[in-house]
Image (cartoon, rainbow, N blue to C red; front, side, top):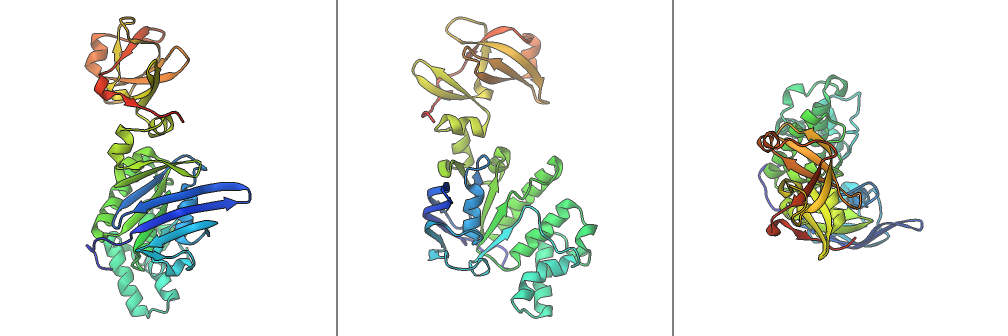
Length: 332
């Protein structure tokens, strides 16, 4: 493995469709992921993100369309010959093998001699800072350590793209944040493409260079984390990414970020609402509001503002914002 190499793993889906019987899981997917990109496929259950990842890995065969890696069609190749490696949610470590032999296993299957495969496996364990635990069995490791062994095992074959299927979902919140930072560091150091499936908006925003939000087997919106979060194009995108209120005004449907939604006295042209709950968040308060059509909205209020004007459940208020903070939305 040559740490620091750049620009490997350009991926392209060209009109890729996957059907399971009469159901369409992925619908004419067109997607380009530049080499060396950390891409998160994001969306609710059933949106097609995991099926797309499995087609890229070779664990599912597309019904139609082409999948390219570094401008070469890989659809007809078995997983081991695609130039990709997949890290599964369950880690799937062999319980009877040491960390070293788990990492070296795929090289052993390829006929690499013991001294060479162990040297490469130690290099990978050094990368994930587990070289000192090379002789331990998986049962002797923490969940975070097991995950890093699985990551080292995936990387030892020198793939052009690493595919990750919800890799953080089994970890507790504290460990999730630490491993998230490690994944980003590994991707930058290796210079290869990471394609990471998640249903967590926070995960995608923290990790990705490219966020691909999917709905019903299609791409709803894609772009940088800031683009997708700050300028959602549809009500679905605004609601799924979170942090936005979706409000219907006479001029149409708009989104406004919750941190830029202001609470005003009722009347004076403000959108009317009633306070339902006031919750402390640690950095301020989240005020949940009910609108005229039973819509649910949120406004973030800092501690000083709440002390100056206390709020309580059932209180009538108005919502306001600056015009430049409004984002027009297409109907879903």
